[in-house]
Image (cartoon, rainbow, N blue to C red):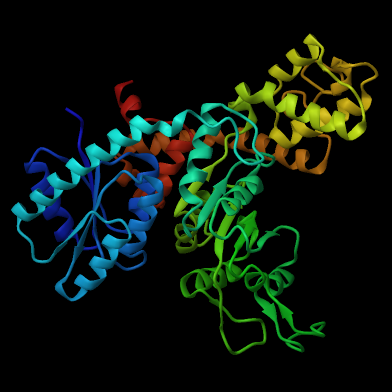
Length: 471
């Protein structure tokens, strides 16, 4: 029999525990969560058969949880718990995809009946999804190239999230194509005919960034010689893409959080808020959970952004796509430069297959463009690639690699720092777990970390508490 895992979300401990006991008495496995934010974090790591959530909760409401679940795991039925005074809102939740609602106070029999009906509906839905299976896998998506299982997961998530207005957080190393994902989401949404506005949060000074995002009134500060429309308003009706969002200050983070909550902006020097209708997509190459634990990123903003996460794999983890990517870039640059390049020499291809690509797909694109320029025949030779690999006298950097531009230099330095820090992080969490008899909650509390952040660190370091206890 399939394991039935139910997630109960309620800010009241007595309700959570009462539901857990009712469900476990019926043979279900129940996990509880005190907030919508924490519940969605769990759903990004685990698959659940059913979610029961309270409608009225501080922070993220049950309605917001429902909308996120319909994107993250659309086959999972959601039962809404409501007070009598909010039955109308519960009916609205059903229009947004909830399976059913139950009003307080309720009996164990009522809960069990609704749970069994919801699970029966889920069984039919899952079977239909399995039978359809999208008529085969995608061989690419928009401007993406690649058929690996890692990229199939990305394509499916884009297809799931594009038709919605949910906020999306794209994570991945530099050069993995985060802006391509943002554009694909926009191009496959109902906003496709409206503006797509991209903002690089690292390219502007803090005072200029606020002016760019929110706009300003003429004379509001020195140099404001005319009124400027902010990019939030420029993107009205469309999609605003904030790249490298980890670089904005805590002050701007607070203003951005207010915009996401209120859906209105106030230009610098202005007094009247201006309503906006945008879909926000953010991206970062840093671990925002780590920044939250360090006090450099607001936790409430992180939860607002991380409703629908999309994690882009580095090229070294999708090497199966390498031949397709090489072929794509060869065709593109051969046509641009009027050359007839039919492929790579065997030793050149072997060199690329063994290379680690710290700069990811962007670096591969640069390598192939350079090689097409340098190639003297119709085959790209090993020396045309100009790769500095381990063993060369010019080696260094990461595995002997020498960066070719400032983006590659930044990415190489980041990877070196990560590899240097990882052994310390592993020792830190393992010692904390040992001191607390492998209890994650107690270990997190002792070290001064939030439990979700501690779990995220375990996941990043690929540490399984169950496996460690067995050693």
